[in-house]
Length: 143
Ligand SMILES: [Zn+2]
Image 1 (cartoon, rainbow, N blue to C red):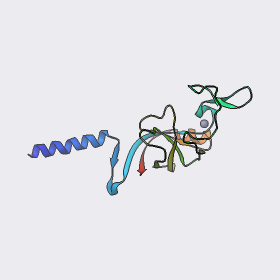
Image 2: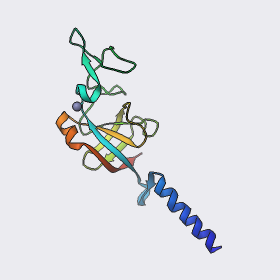
Image 3: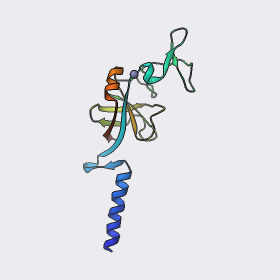
Image 4: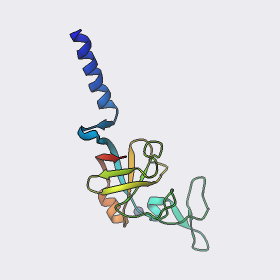
């Protein structure tokens, strides 16, 4: 009997380690993610100007199509300290995430490289996005 209890505890310990979503005390949900920074520049968002100097997608299935700069995939205006791009199969649009060092943001954008436990944080300038770099952070999911 003791062995069974022990193995259940061990199993629980293993699953709570491997599954990144964990519940801390007080019903709070935390998730450890790899967070990068981005801004609305050409380098971060993959756009270029066409012959009429209009911003268009530089590559991908939308190549050559007009692109609205600073508008998120959910249609809102990207705001520094608020806009977060995530894998919306994990964090749907509207999910509030408390990111240490960034603030409490909302998932309102997507990105081709943002899959799984990855976040992209929107910054005002490219310099700020570079300064953030790539960080492994434990964020609080506020549902
Ligand atoms: Zn940029």
